Amino acid sequence: MADDAVQSFIDAYGQSDTSELHIPEHMQRIHKCCCGNDACAYLKHNQVALESLERDVRTAAKLGQVCRLVYNILLSPCWYREVVAHAHRSSGAIVRMRSLFLPIEAAGE
Image (cartoon, rainbow, N blue to C red; front, side, top):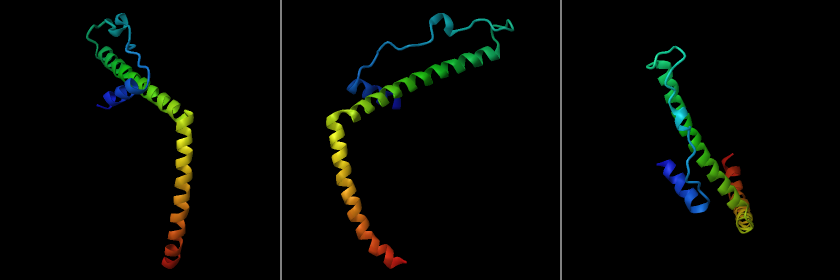
């Protein structure tokens, strides 16, 4: 579900490469272990671990795309002006709130 949300964000705000990179077909399954046993438990464990690693790397790559897109959006000039203006408004509100709470804190001591 989170993976769908990440992909929909990428689709909406940036270029998404639809060709998914993956482990090449000839490397996906190692058919023989060094012990010579085709049904080796270590071989099966390693294959499951590699599949999990590939899935995690894909997810990390998608999250990296989202981070890059958000970073670019935040650095756009119009967005930056809005953020700075909001910060100025917020700092004024924080100062006003702090001045209201100082007497209350002093009374509580």
